[in-house]
Length: 202
Image 1 (cartoon, rainbow, N blue to C red):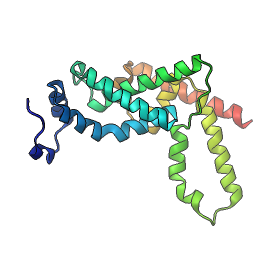
Image 2: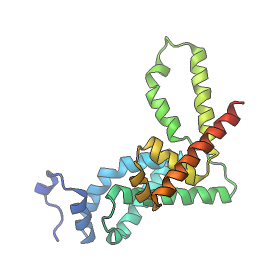
Image 3: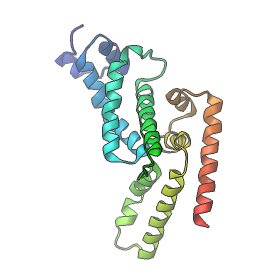
Image 4: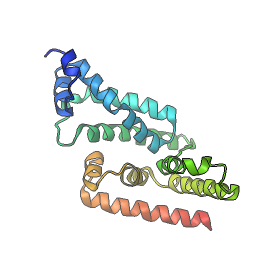
């Protein structure tokens, strides 16, 4: 099959068409998918691992693995769900390796980043009470510490559901879990997070 033509570049090809072209060796089609999803994937991985360099490296590795295994993609989930699963598996493996090596993970969680984004105007306002700014910073640091205490399999539930806004079915597809497992694990993640917060604020 020929590569995507200049005329087709002006058209919005759906993921299914691009994937079909990729399976036939069309490098332009894969480039289109990379350009379409690289920022979203990077942000998702950053929220999970908390390190910009790691997120960038993991994003590249994810796309490499996706290219290598594109023929195994059967289309039972959407392309990004499949791609995200590859990336999160790589991120989880990286975390486990570092834990096994006794490394400390300096993770800025998705909650931290999103909270900072939402409170950007508030934090940058010179009219705000400095004492309140200090309290907000302390609260965010406590939240970060509480999430860091979660195991990776629970942290990923918080990231996907409460940060990325994935529904239960999308989480099930992304992680390859039964729906009941998704719900019970998410409940456990939220319960453990609350318990961690209670300990930290005592």
